[in-house]
Image 1: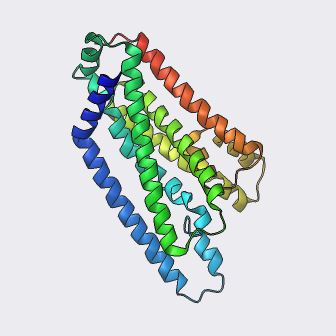
Image 2: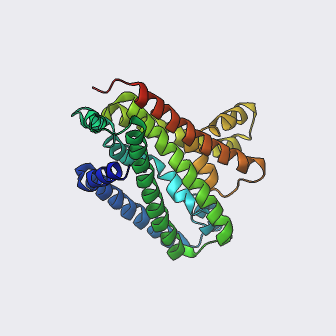
Image 3: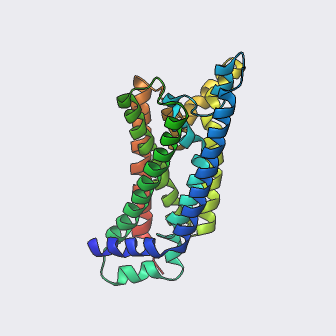
Length: 269
């Protein structure tokens, strides 16, 4: 397993798509933070009667909602990391690198879980880096707000679980399709779906609630990508908190299991 992981780390370090996606992600973060700080400074200096309402339109203007910044930008980061994830399987499949690994004497599950480990490693790295930068930006803008460090850390960890589950799901599609283009296309579709489902609370509030939005809201809670938005709001409590943990854990395990079964049974040519 160690040798396989070393090979995956070497490939990660040498992969040009990783560097390109990292540069795009950094540029996007810098522009997003610059826009946020500019709007925050501009609105903060204006004499607006209902300033609190106006400020609440900006995601995470309150320090207690800092994770919303990451949740709102989930789409762009999912698309970028999906390209990187494909290099661990879809991009390896065409030139026969997967077959070479198997013929070298490594078991199928070892090869698969080595690639899955790298996917989760990259996901943790992206999540920790991006949320750390965004939280720093919020601290500069106005502090932590009403959330204590312990409460914030709890939901930060829950967001990490949901992000890992979503990443495992994306990697599963890479294994199923064996295509970078198809995987990125599915990820874009999922990203739009998660963005839509994550906004159901706001739509429900604006419409005065109702059975239709209640049903959609319950459906949205079955997806880890949408649960990231719920966790980012720091408002989950009671059984909703346990529900979120179960959804994240179940999605992660199920995606990993499906990918392992497909990889084990497929004729690797």
